[in-house]
Length: 241
Image (tube, rainbow, N blue to C red; front, side, top):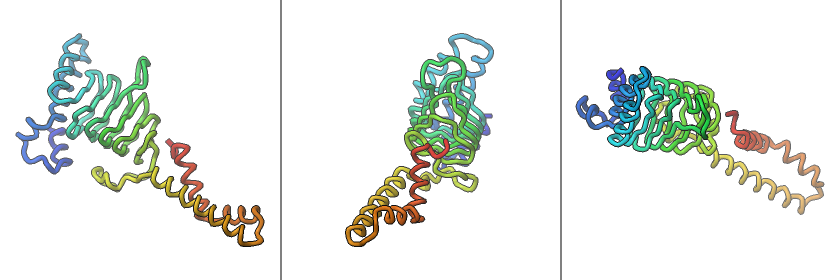
């Protein structure tokens, strides 16, 4: 599993130059090594020691992973400072987690109370994934997002609260953060265009003999208005999350 983790780092980080540098200078890898030892001791019922290992790992790497969390193979925690992964969290194979990410709970629930991430998931810097929710395979979560509900596979999620902005991630590069849509800006633009359209309609009403009802019908029949209606409704409804 360590070899798989090392190989993943070389595949995903262009700054990785040699094995020695990765082993001694990558806190994400070091935190995973500590965690795999702590998790093994945790599973066989050893008290205190797993939590102590986790605490020492946090002190040395800045990454806090509870010994009870289940971490798959090929997981890459890039930079990693401030990452927190809760006790019942599950992280699928080949997930990519950036600094400041929290996989946490929403209260004092008992049992499974932390998120489950599928395989090949990317969680951007500062994102918060909270509660016992399911994140599907190949999901991309934008930096700074707060995800509180289940997310289907092959989608991109951004915003507070997180909303689906893309329905197919199969052909996208996991590192293309610049291609994540700003859905809030798009909705604001749609509302702005709608206000301008309404102003234009009222100007026409003042200058013509059309009734308000006829102008309203004209606005309703406008394809651009219908498209913006759908976008705004999707945004307000959480876009299917």
